[in-house]
Image 1 (cartoon, one colour):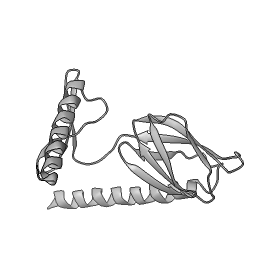
Image 2 (tube, rainbow, N blue to C red):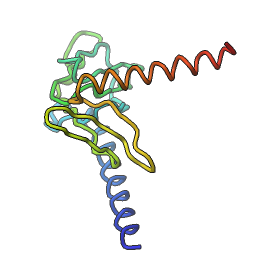
Image 3 (tube, rainbow, N blue to C red):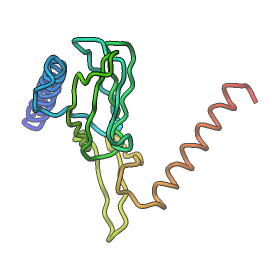
Image 4 (cartoon, one colour):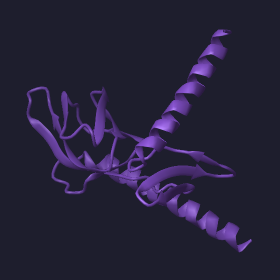
Length: 164
């Protein structure tokens, strides 16, 4: 029973922290002088509404974060790999609206289990059962095996959907 209470408190704490990050990230774009970075998790997207229209988006290192302009006032950040880069927003006259740091962090999700055997690493997401999950730093063989399995499953599903 005590474990359930602790688990509930941890979940509530994460929800509150997530809500605070969302609220803060919306406010970050109101002023380009804010020094706080934009925080994104690897393999997750974050929608950010802007206070004024943007004409052009420039991301320093697209291998770390990707940014898509959904509309003149909505950006979608996607965390690609752990690290730091920056984003520059320009208006229709190519004047800088914002130049801000972007931090992409690894997920702190519950259920992530990393198995390290010497220099060989593999990642799993564990709930009732554990399933392989590719993460940066996993061994190339593990990554290739998981990709091959995923592609085989997708191919099987596509064939079944087509009735072949």
